Image (cartoon, rainbow, N blue to C red; front, side):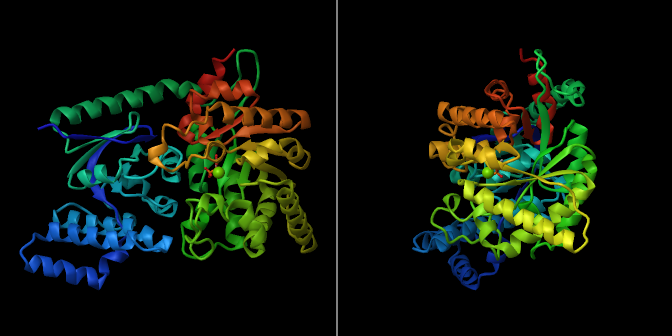
Length: 489
Ligand code: PEP
Ligand code: MG
């Protein structure tokens, strides 16, 4: 019998078939009240699976009705937990992600970036979530890791998928098939072979220097979240790192990393790239990236809240060790620093002042440091509109189209319901990109793009035409971007 096809959103390319693994928040499963409610229903002769799901729904509704936003958001966690327990009762595998020991397709309502970062890469064949969109961080991370992913399946879609033993994921087309029959499995395997063949055909572009036919040189770099990804990125042909997301380093663990540990990480990544430029972005938590103990869930509008450079400037105890670690690691390679979420020249000036102070401090301590260029991520409309002023204080620009798109269009980048409205090629976004490139050009500084638009082959020609000279993307997207550039006039 054919399986059930469920539509979602294209998040990360590739095709996978494997046993389903239901991920949920295990801590909640120990709730005593939940236990006694389930027991009561089972005594009333309801099946344990149905009892767990029903009690989960009741509890979720209670949480959802709470005024406190944080508590209201727990309703999803409750559903996740009860979904997981029910899956286990049905004989399907389900436990914490870190303990995943059989290569599987992971099903989850949502995955926090911290959870995604902790996933055992080799055990995750594919990823399917109810929530999320192409530019939510779970999708970005799946792309970097080369894991086929479909997100935004919706709550009802996920509920249907939860009972499946096997799931086939079509990351190129954004759908899944639960419990595929033999014919469908054969189809997915064929698609897998074709995807591999397409990748192989692009292999010749991996190590070329991308140049348009007219001779314009475009640097094609990688977005990384960990030094572990450096070797892979180099093998895809990365000409540097256009965005090293440092926040994942903070999220992979329970305590904040010390200056020494950060120094080790930044040094490792810059040494891996030798002479090639490596741009370290200072910590950008907030928005959809929570950092327990530093940022919180309590904001009404986290994406418009205390995030990026705003938070760093307010918490020097967090910011200074990071800047010091970057300055020290710069002694070992071609390291640059970049500040996220800048919306005012004063923020850049303050960050640079702190960088200079840290540099002096290190010199007076006799520490080895290197010169560090300081750039700005242009990801708020304010930054693009003030690009001329910013260009006077910045050594380079890198446009973060993920946030720039959501802020320009007032469209939440993580909301699957708004997928059609979220367009990095909207004329308003393109105009802001053009303004930024012009301001960068006038000041003689480089303007790159490190948002997901850079790895989208349909957008690369537009970005190059607008004046972008560097593009940074998830490593597997590099050969195709180089091909597209080399075919431009
Ligand atoms: C962006 O906003 O485009 C970007 C690259 O940063 P992040 O996706 O980490 O917010
Ligand atoms: Mg951003």
